[in-house]
Image (cartoon, rainbow, N blue to C red):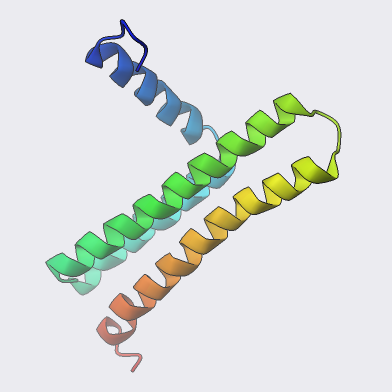
Length: 119
């Protein structure tokens, strides 16, 4: 928050940032997957603790995607031409998303394999 910025102004800035993220294809794909998994949760009637873990997992993926997008955009401003060091930074940033997705897949497996009778 800027020194003389009200909570309302800070909230508007955060909302604007979220709207910018919604314009990103990868973020929209992750959001759609989260929405579909949420529908599946209603269908198989997951438990409240499972809802909590699932919601946190979806949020983790979306936040990681947002951080990745931000780092990539910033790196493109810093160095618009190909640079192997910037490439490594972008790869590491993409790795954040991969880690979040793997964690979410483990969570989904723990929740849905028994519910769908796959064990």
